[in-house]
Length: 107
Image (cartoon, rainbow, N blue to C red; front, top):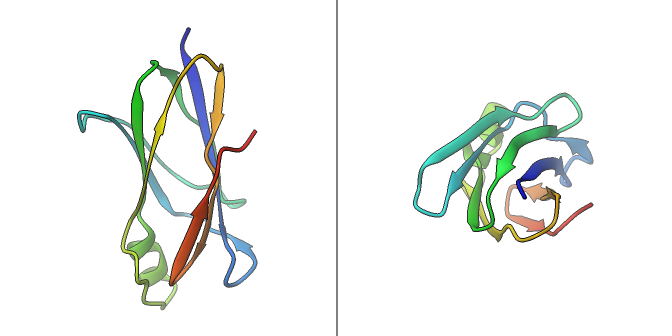
C-alpha cells in the first residue's frame, strides 16, 4: 500500500500561517522525492502520493523563510524524520517560532 503526505506550518510567534515556506521530502537514503512551497494557509495538501513503508525526512527551510520576514532564526532548518507504516495518509504539522518548534503526527 502506498501512503500520502501533507503538512501545515504555523508561525506561533505571530499566530499566522507560514505561507511560502519551502518544504522538501527525502527518502532515508537522501534522495529528493518532492518539494513545494506552503500555500497562503501554510499548507501543502499533497506533498507526496506514493510513499513506501520506510523512514522519510521532511525538511522545512525555516532560516530562509524567517530571513524573508526580517527575522533571524536560531534553527535554519527543521528536519523531521518519520516512519511510514501501514496507514494510508500521514499529516506532519509544524508549529514554528524563531527560537523553537514543535511537531506531531496529525490527522
